[in-house]
Length: 82
Image 1 (cartoon, one colour):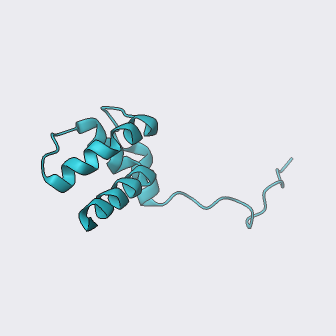
Image 2 (image 1 turned 180 degrees about the horizontal axis):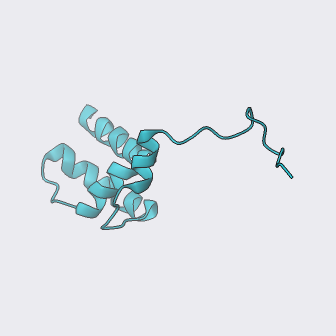
């Protein structure tokens, strides 16, 4: 029997290239969003002052998490405006 529960109009669209890339990105060393937000102030301050030490976990997380990256960019922009 043919499944008719999903008509062509109700099927989700296929994943795009950028979405697939984001899902397959290597996120090691792993950092949760909660951990990222705990480090965010120090990270942003260091970026603005040019003194932030390399933080691989933070950089990896920000490259893979649009919400945290947007928050970091906003905070950096705010600090630079002061």
